[in-house]
Amino acid sequence: MLRVAVLVPFVLLYSLVALGEDSTQTKKIKILPVPTIGYSPETRTYVGAVTLFTFNLHNDSNTRTSNAKLEFNYTWNNQLIVESGWNYFSKAEKWFSRGLIHYSQFPDQYYGVGPNTPENNKLLFNSNRFILDVAVLKKMGAQFFSGIQLKYVNYSHIKPEKLTPIYPELMAASTVGIGYAVLKDTRNNLLTPTKGIYLQVNSFYNIATTNYWEFLVDLRYYKTWNNKFTWANRLANELTTGTPPFYDYPFLGGDKMVRGYYYGRYRDNYLCSWQTELRLPLFWRFGLAAFGGLSTLYGNETSFNVNHIKHNYGLGLRFKVDKKEHTNLRIDYAIGSANNSGFYIAFGESF
Image: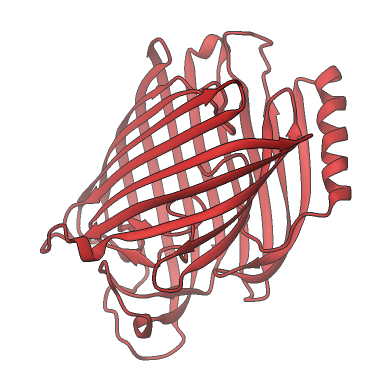
């Protein structure tokens, strides 16, 4: 998702409103294009565009709205990012598919593996990245799905910008993973849920220089009072066995997994994170959000330690670009421990 420190001009917001309302009357597919310019810790200044598609091709009240996005960004760090993702329900939700295709040429920062890696561990490196992650799930019961998930990740042309510190694990690698996924999803909206639960359990076997397992449990709960105030919670547990490639360790940071930290700032074999957020309306199409959480990481040779707990908190502004589908444009500022912070802007909520 997009991460910037510049508010989208209000003239653009009015344009988005017009696009959303016109398409509500005439089309099953709504298209919301947004040019972007901004700044983030990972990219510095960048320009680009993102287009969000929301659609219900079946015109079926028993089928929730599907969505897809196409995103392109070029940054002042000479980073090129092209990404497409989707969440699709077939008629009557008999099948559900989700996926991500990502390509980037990405100068980045690496701090090593561990829950408390110091700032002077930072190493700048360049890499080319390709990610393909696709799941096809069959309906097994009321809003309950299970099926297979395939993942291919390739990091190539790894080039550190200096020789120290030395990280032997920072090398080109690729993995192919096949897994089994179980999903219970009663959310009323995929992008901006206000009620329901989401429970995802994944088990992956990955083939790399060393074979390893990857497990994920992602539980989310949403409650709304008086059709206005929404309380959202997320509890995520992720672990990898053995010694995976550097990019496949559980990590915190970025827009989705613990806002307020540089993407991948901390990583280790085990991650546990609790995030909570209160969302409330202000006036017209504007809303406000307050969020925070606690997270911890530890490795195969260490155990849980209160000194490894990371906190984050922040405030966000919401603008409803599509009243019928309740699609929000989200702008967040988050603060983490050890002087970490970040700005984010995206369609839909962080979770």
